[in-house]
Each structure stands twice: as C-alpha cells, then as structure tokens.
Image (cartoon, rainbow, N blue to C red; front, top):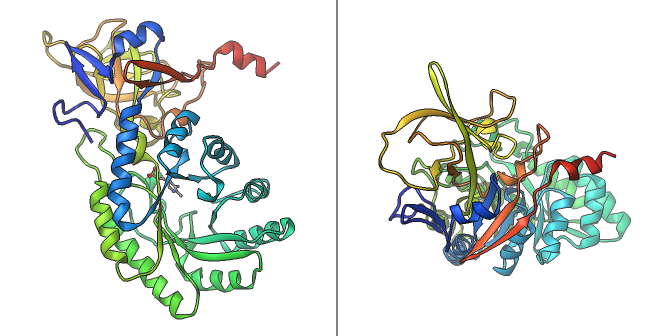
Length: 422
Ligand SMILES: Cc1ncc(COP(=O)(O)O)c(C=O)c1O
C-alpha cells in the first residue's frame, strides 16, 4: 500500500516542495496549530482502503467486520459504519462505541476470551448478532444469561486450528495450548453440549490465527482444517452454515511484506466454492494501519559514546508497539533536506524506561531541535494503546480531509487527569 511515486510514504501522503503533505495540508502547517506529538489520519486513505477491501472480497460473499480494537475512535468508526462494515468487538465499551457510530447491533460480532456476565447481558439487551464462544464453560454461562433474559442468541464456536501464523509471538493466537479458542479435540463435545442448551443456536465455526500475517500459507492450512471439521460435523447432522475467518492480514511496515486482499479473497473463493456457508471476516490492522501517522518534534540530539541519540517529544506511552512487540515504524522528516549525509541514531522518547526506544542504529540525517518528524503506519493498535504514563498528556488525534483538519480526540491534559483523582 506504499505510494509507488514516493516509496517511503503511505497513501494519502506526498512530499511537495520538500514538505510532507497529508492530503491537502503540510505537516508543518498542522503543527503550527496543534502542538506535537499528535496522531493524524488521512480520511481518503481510510475510505480508499475500505472500498478496496469491499471490492476484493465481494466475489467471496464475505461480510466484512471492522475489528474495533485496532482503532476505536468514534469518528473513524463512523466512516466504517457509513461504508457498510459490521463490527467485531471484545468488550462492552467497544459495543457502545460501535452502536454509537451507527453500526447495527445485528452486524456486531462479540469476540473475546473472557466476556463478563455484565457484558453479555448488555450485549443481549442491545441485540448483538453473533457471539463467538471460546469454551464449553462459556457456552453454559451464555445460555444461563440468555435464558434469564428470555432470548435465543446465535453463536459460533471459535476453534483453535493449531497453526503457526508465522508472526510475532505476542500476536499469534492459534498455537496448541493458546488461551484462545476451543481445542479441536473438544469440538464435538462443545457441539453436543450446545445441542442441549435451549437459548443458544450454534450456527458455525470461527478462527482467528493471529495478526500481521504476511503469508497465505497459515490461512490455507487453517482453512483446510476448518473445512475438514465442517464436513465431519455436517455429516454428524450438525447444522453449520457460517464460517468466521477472523482477521490478521499483514500490512507493510517498511520491509515490503504484506498480504493483498485480492490474494486472500482468491484463496477463500477457491476453498469454499463447494460449500454452502456464509463467510465472515474481522479485519482490523489492514483497514486502518496505513492511514495514520504520529507527528513528533525533536527535543534534542545527544552524544553518549558510542551512541548517537535523537530524543523525541513522543514516547512509548504514545506509541507502545516498538516496546511491546519490537515493532518497526518508519520515521521520516516532515521537511526534506539533501545537504547532509545520513548518520545512524538510536531514536528514543522521554519516558523513564530503557524500552522507550523506537529505533536502534537508524539511518537518518542529523536533525535540529524543533524539527518535525513522523512515524508511519500507526493507524492500528497505536492510539488505542496510548496512555498518560509519566503523567504526560494523552495526545490528541486529528483527521485530515482535503484541507480540513479536525480534532477527533482532544488531548487529555494533566489538569483534567487530576480532576478525576480529587
Ligand atoms: C478475534 C479477533 N478478530 C479480529 C482481530 C483483528 O485482527 P487484525 O487487526 O490483525 O486484522 C483480532 C486481533 O487480534 C482478534 O483478536
């Protein structure tokens, strides 16, 4: 999804007269009005990606749900709702967000390994369309609540296909012994249990094998396993008509590795050609990651032999993925310069933790204090993971549409934080 005319810039961005632009605005102009650090999204990049996604999966008949956990800003969810996407949620809070954004509860999938009774009750009051059940214990719990409320709910069983998704160990979810899903050795007994429960209608099977997956192979393996179980279960008389394939498609974090929607769609179409089932997808990262940047200013450089440091005003509390998953987010200058020779720097933030490091030995031109820089591909799993650690301001989020810049999440200042503690 990188722009071919400027290989290091995501779609929706370009350099114009040496200045980085997001849609019709230069970052320099935006930063004159909004102090750094801040998240900034391109509305057209989000809309284009959603349309590309819907187009690619149309031949499969799959219903696309946005995994709200990737970025739950209500204004971005409204864009998803407008495009007709459903929502995949993992908490009562995400359900409130999805509904407030205008996504119909019937188009909501409730995932999550430890849904509480309160959350389940809330979801049933709202009329959530599907519950992805993670254990036999949960089947009983859901049934008891549904019975008490006098409703019958639709569910699918999330199975652990026991494949290695080939991704970072912290975002793989389908290895044997994982906390996620029902072990397939228990699948039969889960379905037999479900058949005895009057308030749960088990409609199908679900999988989610991990995130940032850049090869079709693990998908192909897990789909084959799902089809094998589907056939066995149908032969035993279980009425199964839904398969939820989860999410996980990888995006390009600068190394050129990612999965194309069209390639995955082809795999799905070929695999399910002879089966009468409705397909569902729960996509997060691939829909939103590339549309976001994090703009930060250089506080200073620092020489501390043998290392050169660039100290930024953004820290791990604003962008946690590098410390949490050793994630790589390319860092670029908001103003291009060709005069200097690249050096290598460790790029770090101000937080009192050694893990507050975004890049080691990163080749870049020596910046000056006050220079604007920006991290790319931060639209997913970034602002949602940000915090006010070290009593810092929770940074704002901006949405750019052409030349219009809108604050879509205000900064949460120290004064506002203190009010909650009095
Ligand atoms: C159950 C479930 N579905 C969907 C997703 C979305 O995954 P991704 O953002 O990689 O598409 C996740 C995230 O890990 C998840 O846990």
